[in-house]
Length: 165
Image (tube, rainbow, N blue to C red; front, side, top):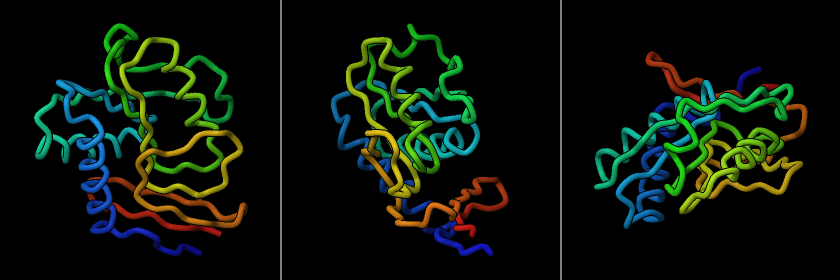
């Protein structure tokens, strides 16, 4: 059974709010990097980038982060080279923070190079973390049971998030 937890309008509103929070966190930057975890996290980072372009004077560089979610200790690949984000401010973006596994390994990857400032953003934080990682910017905090799954759909045709038993 699907229970809609975020509609298109709510996702757009939360995306705009997160963009403002990012802008307020990095007011003096000339550029920030939004590193989105492949698939929905990357799509969400693109949505945030669009909102930032409307309000922030700084440049936004997108980076796609490919993490093997079944085996997160595998090599993580990014669409930017390490030199392209070294000494810059970076926000790691994902759609859902479940156990924290994907985000913690993503954080670990980016800590291999010096960064000016490092933050995390998620659309939905499920509050079931197994790792000491938190979302600095989040659209929705949701307490769920462990057997429930949060799915996010971010397509051109539709945008919504739902809870699945």
